[in-house]
Image (cartoon, rainbow, N blue to C red):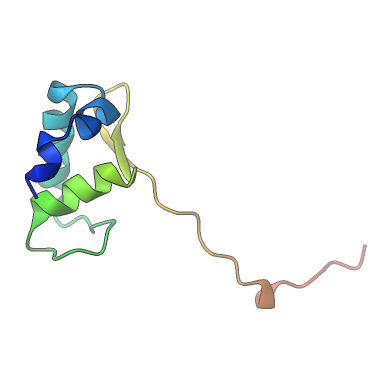
Length: 86
């Protein structure tokens, strides 16, 4: 878990150590308040969840300093598609 924090890649990805600590802290608060994890990991290890969300580009800090999630767009089932008669 903490090996990811030793890598400069994750620090550079978020824009520095201060932003990294900010996004970790704010996302941990969200998870503790009941937000669902965006990665498939043990939900009890919230720090690993947050680090994987950052590494996988699932979360980021917006210019206002808020944690924003990037969820995948909903899957479209092509079998449910009905073409129009145009």
